Amino acid sequence: MKELDKKFIGKKYSPIQFNVEKQRLKFFSKATGQSDPIYFDEAIAKEKGFPSIVAPPTFLTTIGYEKENPYDYLEDLGISIARILSAGQKYYYFNLIFGGDIIFMESEIQDIYVKKAGKLQFIEFLSIYTNQSDLSIAPSVSTLVFR
Amino acid sequence: MDYKNLKIGDSIPSLENPPITRTMLALYAGASGDHNPIHIDIDFAKKSGFSDVIAHGMLIMAIASKNLTNVFTQNSIKEISVKFVSMTKIGDELTSDCKIIEKDIIDNKVLFTLSLSVKDNSGDEKLKGKAKIELNE
Image 1 (spheres, rainbow over the protein chains, first blue to last red):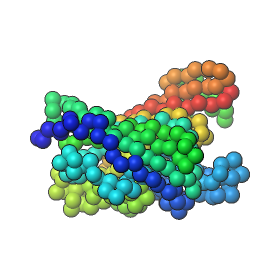
Image 2: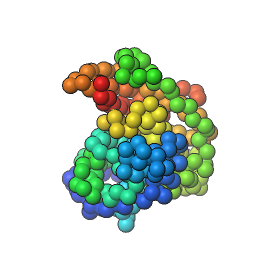
Image 3: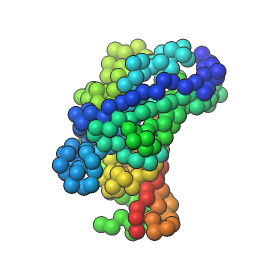
Image 4: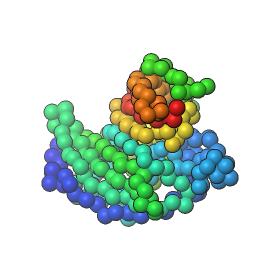
């Protein structure tokens, strides 16, 4: 099995800007089974004190996929998409995301490590999300397993 | 119910989900932007060594998160961290359970740590994790 090159630890990927479209938010909320109207109905979200409809907790995951090439790191590491799966995810929430927000995401490879006597290798990304008012939205740690 | 009064060992109402279907995975792929064909293309999944497509891990995390937002306002959720411990297949019926494992009261805030677990109908765990919730007293 290919050994992942640890020289990519610390590699930073170009920041991206993501416009939070309301239709996309509703599609995500629907696809993840949400039913609370704060995720769908602008008027109700405003009644509850939010500026617009709310992004559910795992919506952050969509932002990285909007890069021109969301799998740029696979090219760096020289591995195929067929060999990677999500192994874990951590989100530390500071502020919510709302419809109409602009989110900036910066990410880097934080670690590459081996488990199960080399049978599984893990790639850990640190991503930092902020919004158009420079408010911190969340840091996130995503772990992928290469099998 | 006033969830501030929950004690260590208490559970919040669990969330039972309908069986995972190919449609759910296709819609999640579109909505999330995660187009990895291993989740939507059976031919690709077979070539990659699986017998069928497998669900997106992040869809399972979304289920655990919905279990939390069903009870707590989203503003009160400060942290969710999970591990995907086994693969979810088509037809799996998932149930999410969250249990209070720590409780502190600091500066008029109630801080809960919950354990998260999503299992299928045969009891196989798919996701385990923790969440931190902060409520104003």
